[in-house]
Length: 242
Image 1 (cartoon, rainbow, N blue to C red):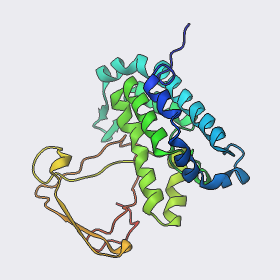
Image 2 (image 1 turned 30 degrees about the horizontal axis):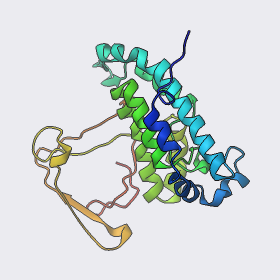
Image 3 (image 1 turned 180 degrees about the vertical axis):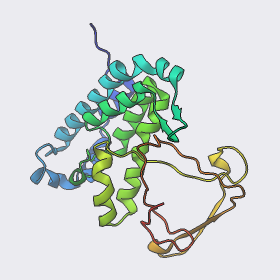
């Protein structure tokens, strides 16, 4: 049986991986390749990193083509399931299986530092992975792409919050959720109106119009957990659980 690969069969993606401009990105992301002193899998040079990135994307492409795409129509047909007796929403079985497969391949922490269990890849590689998964199943991309929230935690949270959330997110043991409000009507994120003020990094405040505010949640409700907020909202301390 011929195995497909949504990375190697896409010349646009392979082209960008070979661009010389990526050398500078690699050097910055790998911080002088100092991780190789602590992590055996970390690259020791630009070419080593490029080869490592290629191998990761090859794994993503293979999983997308062979473990995700064949079941996309079934996912659309089944959809999520609501158990009213337990007020529980679960993914379609192929979706749950795909997320498990991605976690088993250590693909749930693309841009997260290695010390938390992530791959420490540049956002360029993460964007390529998003395109690959989208091609296989656009609905799964929404869930796979929620690891971007882990990147937000890594950028803005304190060390205690990072140590608590990033390792299980990278292992696929936790999922993330995007929770927003609807100031006018519908889930129209472009219509959300917020004002921000405050000069100090840790004293930012936000305010928005939220009549009939209802949360927008993305994620399997059975697996979702309270999540840290990266900004101070109306006096709540940064890192407080929502």
